[in-house]
Image (cartoon, rainbow, N blue to C red):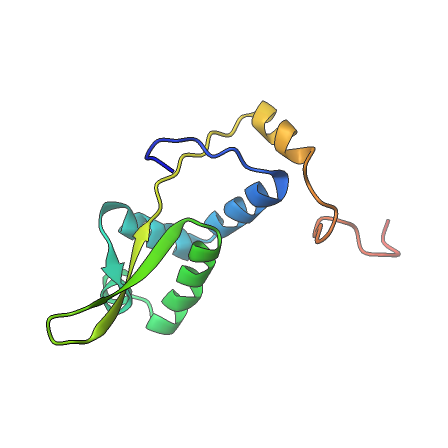
Length: 118
């Protein structure tokens, strides 16, 4: 996808992307990667969070297609996994949401009222 290209997402995909972006930690991670790629230790130091917590958020961002990763060898032969933001553009309007809503699956709808409480 080229930079600036608007994603046209199915309802389920839109929910996944928006849920991924709903975390302040993941927003900070994505913001840090917007300007440059980084490896986990560097990014964890820059953001002031543990590598373990960062890995959790990077996996969710990668699963949602918002970041990509690749391994590179450093000058001393150490393998480093670099992450970078995937170029994307989301254009949300009521009409876009209405179209996406028509493609939603019913599985995993967390907004349903619990049984016996309707």
